[in-house]
Length: 216
Image (cartoon, rainbow, N blue to C red; front, side, top):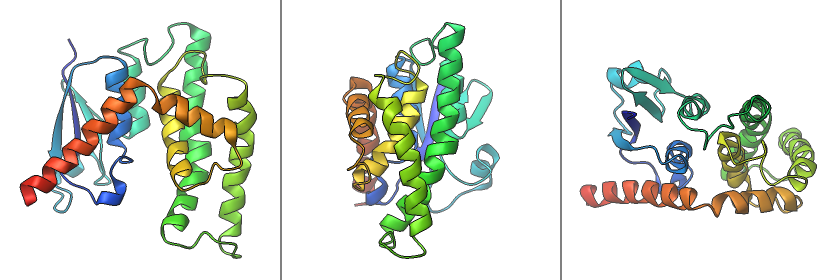
């Protein structure tokens, strides 16, 4: 039996709750029905032991016995080695899942994250500074739209690629960035309708709500 511990922050600002990246790992663990425990580290006082697991002082990281893994994509690929519920067993499906994992993180999130920062800081309007980033995201979404219009999931069956891609697009959707991309929006809705997402999301929200109660 796997000895899995997910480490996240003990508290985060309210606006980030429901979108912190430990949700991706929780989702994968729930999808695969893998037993795990959750540990936490301080949000405001990051110790040397934290940086030993995550050199950038971020979360999440996962320990599997004596193995410690950081970065959500790497963690999900590791979990994919433990369950065919997360990565297809056949070579073609496995290859497709892998390529879409990297596409989600390197092609789509690369475009969505700067746009998201602009939106959250109120600087994503029709300005010369914002236009290149708005156009970059639109280009990526325009490429994703026909892909998602033609398939239910990226690699045939639901996989870690869908956890990552839908989570990347979910934040764009929250900020009304998928208005002109109905297939992308429908894909996010399909993915987040899964019971494993609902459980992961509820657990993350409860984790931070408990921190508020302790602080109060």
